[in-house]
Length: 74
Image (tube, rainbow, N blue to C red; front, side):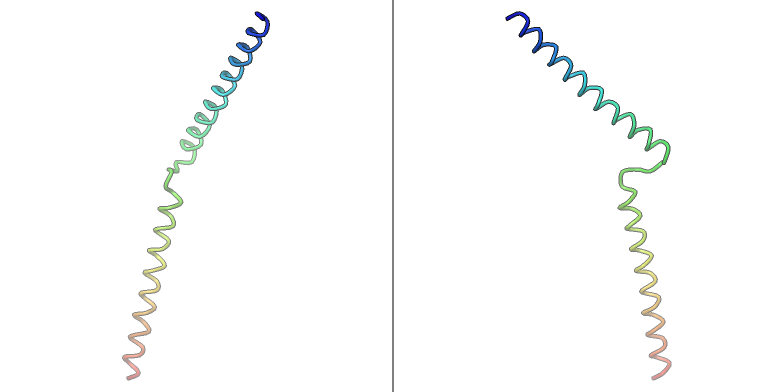
């Protein structure tokens, strides 16, 4: 009975140690990646927003140019 309790305790401790090391490695690795690249969590979203603003500006310029052309022809 004592061997079974020891086996269960060792299994539990091993599992907890494995989970602890697995989680801590990911946190350190992601922190290092962020430091190396300088990117933040919302970079994709902010890039998409800027791209949408640029596209909107180009479309508005095209619309203004088309309106100007139509006004000249009339």
